[in-house]
Image 1 (cartoon, protein in one colour):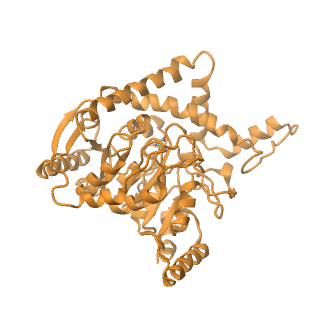
Image 2 (cartoon, protein in one colour):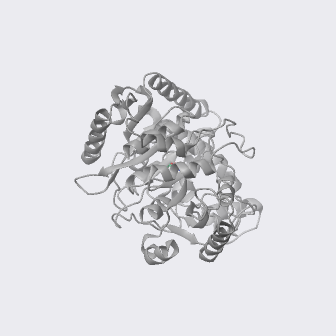
Image 3 (cartoon, rainbow, N blue to C red):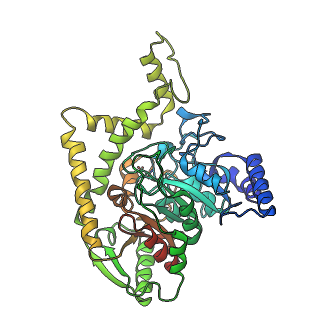
Length: 456
Ligand code: GLN
């Protein structure tokens, strides 16, 4: 049924870069046979899933939305993909994304943008717009995304979906094509909080193949989500509203739905207080130094030799340096080039302390803001994004405007804390979905599921 739905709507939506129909049907048939034979299967066995194209899959091309990786089929699976397969989920295909996960609209995909199912003249968010659109349009019940500065939460918010960025180190990054290694996390996209929790339980937990993977034993996220459905689940919960992430600069309908949700929380017995995080003001600026610096280093591996395409220069000698330059010139899009230039500049001798060094200090201040806030409250909340889905082209020629769309989501990545976006209704002025962002202390992901399920 999901493959039929994809045939029906995806020519227009373009949520998928690759659909693996025959393989999906074969996997589904195998799971059916196992079930018929009385084998004990997990709760998601047989459930189809869409996979963001940033994750390595040994049976499907993996391009990260870039021409430089066109046609590349990795020789291995990302750990999260291996875990999906082991749990009996059925991969449907790979979803569209901004090139190398750089963007907030999917307009930076080298393969053309994805449309928002709610309004096809609008963006589905980014960088994981394909995963969110696929879930929102009922092409897949579940999807995987990656979130470096909001790429799971913001697309979830603007498509009326649920999206979770786990605690840094909670889900393996092995086989996730790196954007900024100190910020990247893989996480679930779904239509309900409980579905996201079931998927989190499948993909999470220690992986020796990722050196930053936490060795903690994690509680069941599904059990935490179920706890949120009990009467009185929110009683006594201390909720902090981040002063710096509400009020001015937010679309009126976003602010209105946010305020209504706070009133509902109070009515449900939560204690809602305002908290200040004074350094969040500098989060976007610090992020756009740290991210390009790490990205410029990570993307150095696309050298025309090890992966993807190779382009020879039009004239002159074929030295390795000239082939590499011609390949990177043809293979990378404008946003990727912009960030490589920013990153290499910020890392160069003489500028390192002033830019990268200062940004790392700001990062520490933001972590301290979180620590101070979580000393007072159990969870922090804000709108997931400043606006609902914007129109194609609206921010494409203005990188600063595009970057500022991440003001709400970036702090959680800089501090490594988990964040979730849950739908809280439609903005009255445009009828488009609004998301609530919930954040919890590091390793308290389960709390997000309890609170998210209760709010949903
Ligand atoms: N929009 C952010 C950026 O462009 C988010 C990226 C991400 O989370 N992958 O960097």
